[in-house]
Length: 304
Ligand code: CP
Ligand code: NVA
Image (cartoon, rainbow, N blue to C red):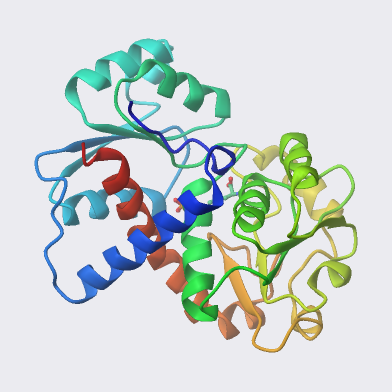
């Protein structure tokens, strides 16, 4: 049966770790010029109904490095934008391609696409989650800290797609996860239910950023207004005042604490330029690791 990557909730901690191990191998192969063109002759269709820099480039370059090909379908310019049913798009693309990556609004659209496609579907971000990004984040943390289990991850800001995936991915990999967000901007209830059901790693949802970052090994933040929420920008600026990762907040963390940001960043809002630049190596390594983590996902799902 074909496999998809729709959300981290569908994966076990062991499966996440297997992807991360494969991602490390992909990175090693690429850095050492070891051939790894395992997807020769295969094509990935990439559907984008939202903007992207990293996701588009890393998937396209990743497919090229694996010996395959990627094609870009913009929501607006394809028939998707004119209302062609997702189940028909799924069946058509399954006749031409070997995999589909989709970035869109509703998680349900991705699940529907996967249901009707006979080829693997990968979620490249929805309003609900961003699994590929969080695989890259976990890979980056594991690389620098040599493990995930027992570390504390703090997320500061909106309970958005990134927060949802970090909670699930972090807990599944044995990390304690602490989230600080203003009332009214909590993570998705399905994710909070999952967090409640976890035994072992600790989860907490707090209102004060200082409470979340106490003794943290990794601090993660993301924009206050995600794609699709542009109209709420001003209201969100007010709601999130004080939810900024700054030097004062970083003083409360564990020594050697990392900072991760999926990018793009709004410096001066969710993170100061000072903290961003102090942790730029980690943040851009995280961006690079999108490539390696996704090559692992593509290989594991599309090798046939
Ligand atoms: N982090 C991330 O997904 O970046 P893009 O929106 O540029 O793809
Ligand atoms: N939360 C952000 C992530 C961008 C990569 C958004 O959805 O716009």
